[in-house]
Picture 1 (spheres, rainbow, N blue to C red):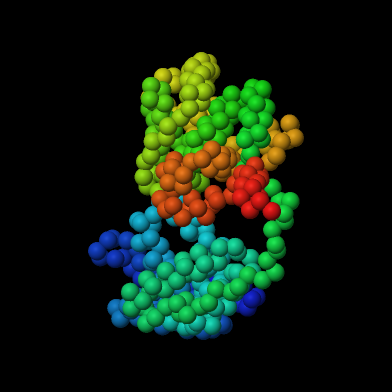
Picture 2: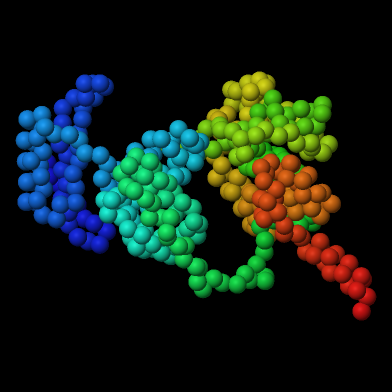
Length: 381
């Protein structure tokens, strides 16, 4: 059947799919798709030609022609090299941005100018344009290796300079709490009935863990005797929007030393969890039990933490930071307390110390004031 479809610019094209028989090696049905015909007549002639070739045994399925077809071949290989969560994000990036831009072009006909125009268009609505370009380029590198094309046109594409970039507002609040703000936040949270939220947020603020790492913790990971927590996995979202456990972001486990009070809070929560969940029909005494679970004793939806935070922040008129902001808070206060870059890097689980320096070189106003006071005292003018 010949179908009509519309291009992004509104032009009409025609396509069809042909049954080619059964693959002797796999026993699976084989089909091929042809598209891009400007008129129905062109599509009908091409369809008739292929039917004759199939009937006479002369048809040979052509290799991937369009960027989208090459992408689909590349995707089969790529899926085996990354985590589910990364794979899902990559597919979304291609479906929402890259394929609508260049997916229908024949791979051999894509020039540097076409790629440059696509990158310029993506840059108008996307922040991390270098990442988008890199993924599109990977498909072309795959095409070069498969001998579909001779070279990668994205190698010659230049990233557009971001224009009209607004200067940061000096009154803009950063996504972390000062020591005093953190104390106030946790104090207000402790007054509420959501004990689970209080324990989780205190743990995040005093450990610097990523949210996904905390939501993946089991009681086996917590050693009350040595006051240590073993971080070796993380909760993430994979295919079909399902939550699953994966390795940490750096694929490395780390052990975090904790303070006495936070360990006591966790000990209190373990006891309360046992009592509360027993009423719901769940035995939480096993070491494999999640430290934080929902009412069905399953994974807590990561978006739930934002809801818990906003409730307390709005009720008590507190500064609004995100859940990840508690990780920033931990880092900032570590620096303020005199911790070295290496110590912070190890505790937060950064594989590269540049990440620690680039993301967490901000300091609190108190530290900034101390810096200028030291300068003033030293210069003594």
